[in-house]
Amino acid sequence: MLSMEENPPKVNKWDGNALKNALDDAVKDVLLTQFSYVESHKLLDGRLIISSVAVGFSIFALVWDWLYPFPQSRTVMCVCVVSYFVMMGVLTWYTTCLERGIFCTALNKDAAGIDPDDVWNASSSLKRFDNKYHLRLTQRMGKSGKGKEAHTTLTVENFFDETGRLLYGAVAKEVLRLHSDVENKKN
Amino acid sequence: MLQLDFLDDLRRMNMRQLFYQLLNFAMIVSSALMIWKGLMVVTGSESPIVVVLSMEPAFQRGDLLFLTNYEQEPIRAGEIVVFKVEGRDIPIVHRVMKVHEKEDGSVKFLTKGDNNNVDDRGLYANGQAWLNRKDVVGRARGYVPFIGIVTIIMNDYPKFKYAVLAGLGLFVLVHRE
Image 1 (cartoon, each protein chain N blue to C red):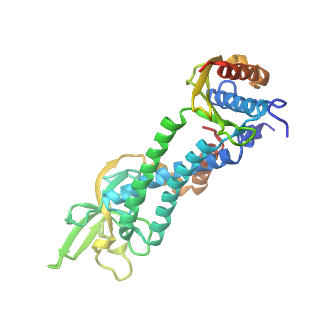
Image 2: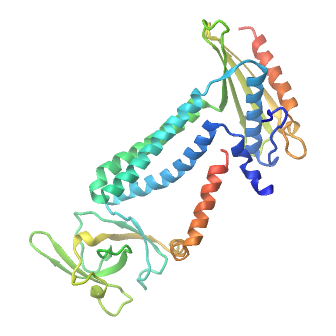
Image 3: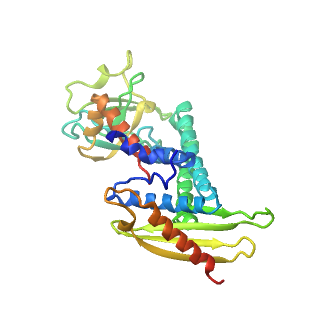
């Protein structure tokens, strides 16, 4: 299978959502391949668990109502419906407060395996119909707990060619620059 | 080659992201399901929204009726009720003509469609002359005109229904947030 560097994705250049996803994927690819970081799936896993629980309630309600038709199933239905919407609320809170546009968490594992890892978080935003892609990279040192961050704004059209193919090299350059900006900041 | 372009997004996803796409689809279906069940609980009716097939001039074919089915509220002659005959799936929207009530609270009704010349005894089950409380799905409380035509079309042409649902489902599964 070709790596993203060899075969960058081609997207519909007029679709802002597709552009953002492609840029996010590229940034993630650079972080994981250029440095020896390991990806942490904790954030996405949390979202998957919350969604699965919500769907679980819904499936349970469906089966229960099928087995014990309506008037008897009233209390169970009530509980399931309320729980489902509570879980939806939890999911919204999770996405808004905890995730906040973070699409990649990478861990800089300590070679000796003794010290806790440094956590790198990459988050981005691209407003609808806008061409400014805001990228933010943060580093939280495992040992000291201190955090450093740097952000940059990229003009989307500079990173895709005429056909909508991603310009991996250009993205990699920006990410590497941002990465060293963060590392070199004095805390 | 061209028609498989839209699958590109899926191909570039890892297991977790694929699972999330599936969950996304499941959540949309679940939301619709939960809203329906929620309505069932709130109104007390097993089918809180029905489509009218014939009840002119009060309702036109394709009107959407909103029902409630509260036990405490008595059913009176002149009201429009929705009932199901035992053994048949389709709910019928007709008006109550006669009500017989016993001291213990049990009731029997006779119904007739406004547009029909005779009462509904021909529609009831074999040997049944009256409807009971348990046959009633609910009483009409409000309506939205015309929107139910979509449901009627989808039921008359099931292939159309499956095509629309499949298309929507596919779109949600393949489209990345």
